[in-house]
Image (cartoon, rainbow, N blue to C red; front, side):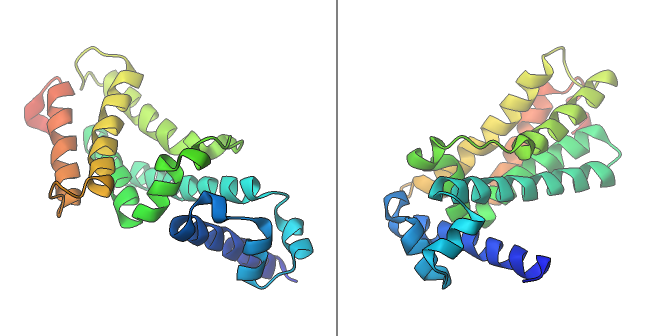
Length: 198
């Protein structure tokens, strides 16, 4: 197989593992079930991943690395730090809401949450946000506050909306994207030294 074929097979395995977990739960995912679903023998599947935990580590890492690419693209496009921070926080909401099954697996599934993801790049998207906040602080755009606290407040506000939109059916979150944008702007106004700039 060519490198492209190997990569495509690997990606198919990872995607199928996600589908199984979404439709049947983590307990239903086994290497035998996964191999049958992707048309491989169990032995062939083990050449790609030694355990189902490794498959799900790859699933989570691939998704978070794709999110990092979005953050880096915003960082490269946007010269105004506050606008960049706003776009990055909103991008997290969009990332979560465009594929709520993926979001559930990565952030809400208790069994998946126990898996230690060893890929050091998984927090790179968050690190891009932190670096952008530091730049804004260097320009005196925020009230005096720890960089990490600013990032955590922003991410937590978006994460909270997304979790509720995904899990609470009794409250109308029909336009969760708009709510995310509104929440990010409101939080930034509260954190900014000059709220009128938001």
